[in-house]
Length: 93
Image 1: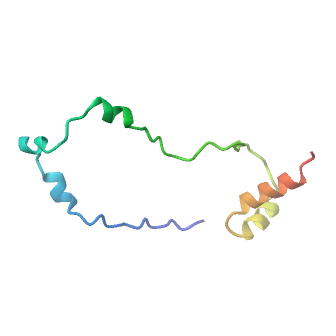
Image 2: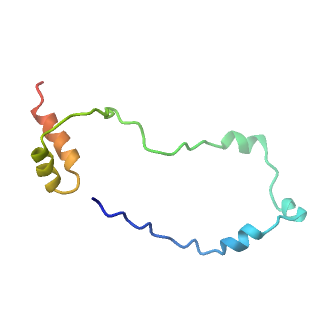
Image 3: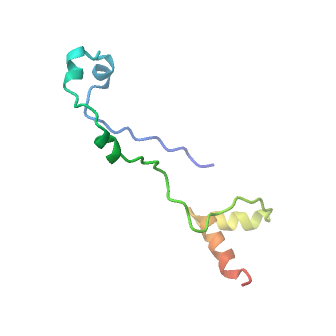
């Protein structure tokens, strides 16, 4: 089995407890600019994530001999991708 990786914790360089405890005062709202229609019109929505693939992969289930799986796994990380590439090259056209 694969050993789970520990997530690295990056420091934000700020005191998050202090920020979370801060209560916004009325005068702080005066510092904010007025939101205009022009500002809203320039706004964009970033949905994030990966772009859609031109040829998306499809999940299937296939049964293979145990020794075949072990040989591919022994070839190291990325074995499933290499297996898919080999199948693509050998598939009838």
